[in-house]
Length: 279
Image (cartoon, one colour):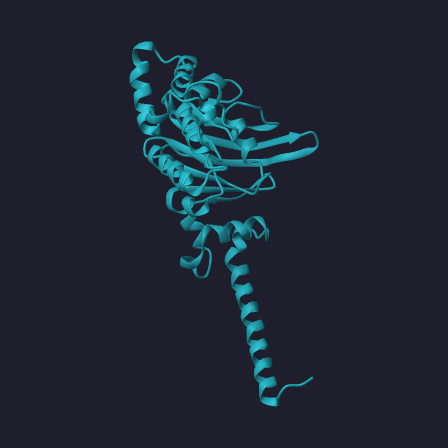
């Protein structure tokens, strides 16, 4: 599991993260959400040991980022926002290269590559230059490199960024398939997919955790939960800056005010209609 404790990060005088705390339990798919600039990528880079925090810590399966960074890297497959690919390499050559870096024994390498190629649907692209592939296929290659060493945990930073609708369906379906066997932490802006797929949601805003729960529990705080989407919750927490405990109250009040305004407008129209048009 991943345990993030009181994580803070400064870039100069700018506080990118402010006491971020949450857990990702074994076997969960956790959606890591927030507006652009909220601190999602920074958090993921700290968890994967690409950068240190200013304060706080992260533990992955009881290994600490300060003392056991190499052990943590062995356990994680990381797809950053910018896919780490060499565009002048053939797909198969690249996967062999990654397998060698990950120290997969030669006698097991073919079996592992065959599994990854089948899982990620790359059989038709193996002899192609990565640079000639569509963005959707490049994301498949990126996911393949995260899986090649059979990590327990996957951390995926906006894996659907820049994809067309068909490619998004392919990649999200692949993540859903992978999530049946792995612990997955994924940042995305595709909120309907999060509703249907992810076990828990963390929402960041201005470097702070403003929500950490399941989608069902979040929407249960509204007066009419069945008609509440994650988009509504996200907007209320990150644009309106409503606190989690006030979600239902604010929404109910807003609906009453809107209803009162409509009633007033309707009465005004009715009065004017009865009295004739006035200029």
